[in-house]
Image 1 (tube, rainbow, N blue to C red):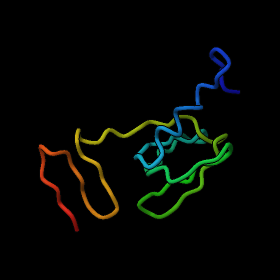
Image 2 (cartoon, helix red, strand yellow; image 1 turned 90 degrees about the vertical axis):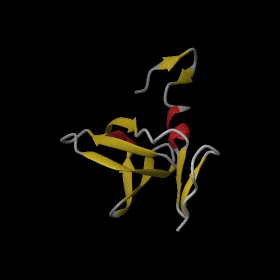
Image 3 (cartoon, one colour; image 1 turned 90 degrees about the horizontal axis):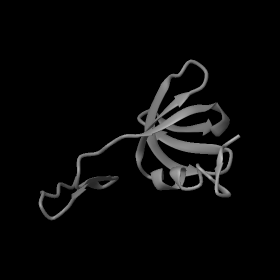
Image 4 (cartoon, one colour; image 1 turned 30 degrees about the horizontal axis):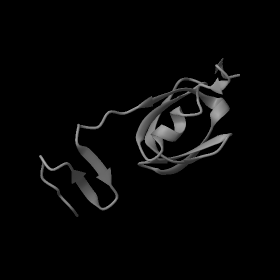
Length: 92
C-alpha cells in the first residue's frame, strides 16, 4: 500500500505529472524496462504508447517509474518538434 504523508498519497501528483511524457517503467517480474509515453491512467492501470504500439500495464505489476529527461526547451509532438524561441522549429 502507498505511504501517506499528512493525509495525501505520494502517488497522487506523480503519475498525473508524467501524462504525455516519456517514461521507463520497470516491472516487478524480472524488472524488464518498458519505455514509452503515458497516454492515460486510472486507479489500476497505465496506458503506455511504445514503439510497438499501445501497452496496458497494471499498476500492481510496476516496480518503478522513471521519467526520461528530454533536452531542455524541446517538446516532442506528434506533428514534429516544437522548441522555445532560442532554437529552430522543425515540422514534418
